[in-house]
Amino acid sequence: MKKSVFTVIITIIITINGYSQQFGNITAIDNLLQLYAVSAQNGAQDAEQILTGYLSPLMKGIGFGMASGWVNTAATHKPGGFDFSISLNTSFIPVSDYVYTIGPLKEATLVSPGDGSIPTIFGRNGAPTFQHNITNEYFDGAGGMGFESAFGSFIPTPMVQAGIGVIPGTDVKIRFMPPLKNTQYGLNVNMLGIGGTHDLTQYIPDMGDENFKISAFAGFTRFNFNADLSDAKDKSKTAAFHVNSITVQAIASKTITIFTLYASGGVTQSLLNTSFKGGYSIDNDPSTIEVTDPLDMTFGSLGPRGTLGLQMKFIALTMNMDYTFQKYNTLSVGLGISIK
Image 1 (cartoon, rainbow, N blue to C red):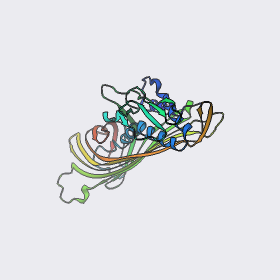
Image 2: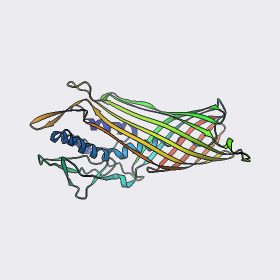
Image 3: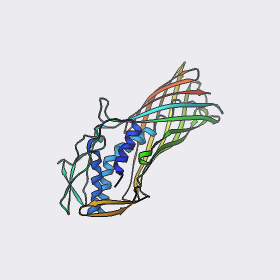
Image 4: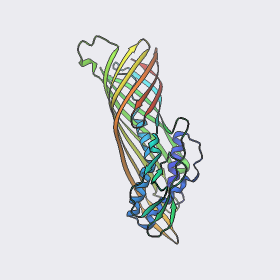
């Protein structure tokens, strides 16, 4: 292939997150496509299993990041009131997800490591070794990118968000990430989300404290990136990644002068899809095998979440920081303006 689909994946990661580390033999993941040279059907199943385990932490990290940082108070705007903010959600990769355990393969056998523990994209640099069951040839999978730091591995998700009061007790929010493009790989990356907050305090009689609020929130975010892999031979090759993330939660907040303490609890669900479309030529010395639409993987994550945070407001300027406890714990910081 003139353009490596997996090099595109890594380029996307580097582009989004600003990493500058060398990634050595990461393009060895291309060898996984050699599974198709043995069996286009069963090889596809093997490759999908390996790639799902390898990429899962990246896609989950993006999903949990997108689901975080939606609200920093349970109070809603008056109709016409609005807020605008820039935020950064950083999801931390659990140490347990630096590796994954491979299940039974149909067309290949894992040779090393012997314990079956394979690095994910965030794991160690060493690449696993496989052997074709029919040809008995050995090939390397992909080693991790070694993103561990003093703070562990993490995925930052920057975004811009705006909210407006539409009717008493109800806000509508939108969030997006400025589109990113990489002309070398025909890359297009974007994110868009919509959500809403509804004040529940108005239904509770005799609250007696105007500075204490309880609200409900629901939000949906979609993250897309697409890469054009076309070459002189094939004009229709593409790689696509989509992450859909849903957040539903209850929020309580208490305002004391310029400070607002807030807490929330709920659930997050992320649905992740990776696909490669078009025709691909895979070298299988001494011949070449043609495959069409080689990969289409979908996997998801569902779990509880709980957030503790603090907002400070100086006239119209707001600053907030919170920490969400979920499968991939997430730190969110934001700066914005809010007009009631």
